[in-house]
Structures are given as C-alpha cells and as structure tokens.
Image 1 (tube, rainbow, N blue to C red):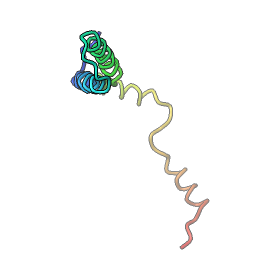
Image 2 (cartoon, rainbow, N blue to C red):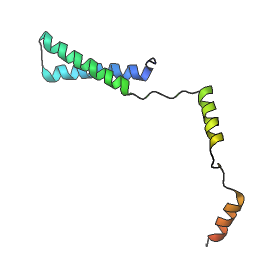
Image 3 (cartoon, rainbow, N blue to C red):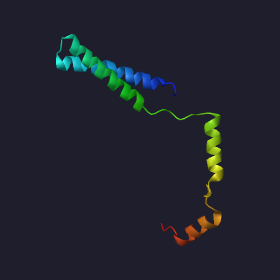
Image 4 (cartoon, rainbow, N blue to C red):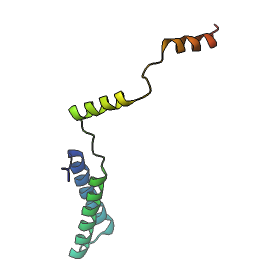
Length: 96
C-alpha cells in the first residue's frame, strides 16, 4: 500500500476536526457515549475523505519514458502535411 500524500493527510485531518466540532455542536450531547459515537463517525468520515483524494501521477524519468513510448506508438502524425494545408486554403478563400 502506498504511503499517504501530504494532501491526503491534510484533507483527512481537517475533515475529522471540522466534522467532530460540527456534530458536537449540532447534537449538543454531553454524554461519554455520544461523544464516542460522534468521534468514531468523524474518524470514519476523515478516512473516507483521505482515501478519495486523487493521488498525483508519477513525474520524472518514468513519466517521460511513458510519454515517449505513447508518442512513438501513435499512428496519427502531430503535424498536418503542407499539401493538405494548401488544399484547404484554396478551397475556402478569405474575402475581405
């Protein structure tokens, strides 16, 4: 399992703190059982948020070589041949 990123830790922690405070204020509970249930729900919500934050793609040598392989395997050229551009320009003259 990959290590969590800084964004995942930040979003998960912020979710736990904010949701715990909000649920405690809204429920106005003062019993130990109520606080424990709210805390468990907030932890579950924070874990869900942390796991759904998108993980950034790898950068560096691996990404560059994958990009090169994809470009080399592409059957469609990146540029349009000059004769096609000239034919398209002659078919649709621009009138000013």
